[in-house]
Image (tube, rainbow, N blue to C red):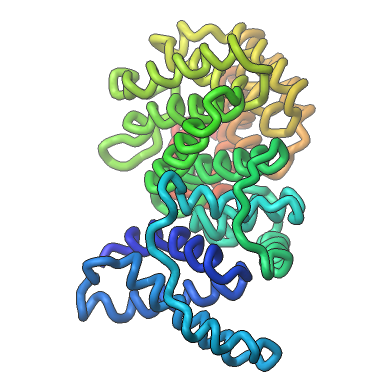
Length: 392
């Protein structure tokens, strides 16, 4: 049995149950029990002809049992017990996963809770992975998810996709893609299933909202970033940095689509952070090499991004571009102003700039510090290899 089958079906089954019964938290519990039953039964009995329908039926039965055990809902027992399981297929033109996204981004929830719940329910990320994406303690994310589930008790689906709700959905999809593109832990550089799912969901949003500049910008950003994936890992599984990648391996089709999307968006829609990030990715994608990259244009785009969506990671990325334009020493001076002191990428950038400036001992220590702080094994290996090439 393929575990990815259960992972891909889980949000669809959850969406079907909540659409039928309401109460997000109770339905999620029922779905988890159905997934557990499938993982125990299918290896011996075989995957059913209609696995989604099997999961929905099993989860629906469990939901009914939960309802029966609640004496306060005794009056509903007969109606629920007689109810047929929800239809495995949503209405024509409705994507249950996208609908679940909108529910998770309910306006009653605070933005951090919206993002955390959606990453958990739709993206399938663990609480620990979400915590690393947010750069906050795991307990904090667990509390956010629990509060969100409680707040959604009794809520059913709404097709509302207003600006605030859409902004939350875009942030969720961006974080899902980011975790997939650069896995925060484990032995793999990336998690293709997450990047693929994020792109699929953004394509669905773009089909519904083709004139929205930020939806278009996010889709372009994902395509341009994912285009580089075939060159990011060597034959031995080692991480290959952008400057060393074989650009002939990049997906020309994805780059062409991404460049076309962001060009149209910048010309027709109000500017936003996803468009600016996509524009930066497009400059990288169209350059023949690191040396021929238009770093001055990238630096200008980061200056705009700092105004539109300031943040420590934007500042850190800007430092890299600033150093390419003004030199490593100037970059180190800029790096001193980055507030994200304890993140491994700060040490990694410091190591690179110190190496460029000729301070090989300092660079070695910075690379080793970065290697100790990251949970990604490929990144650890890459940083340790960089340090090993430098004399103490």
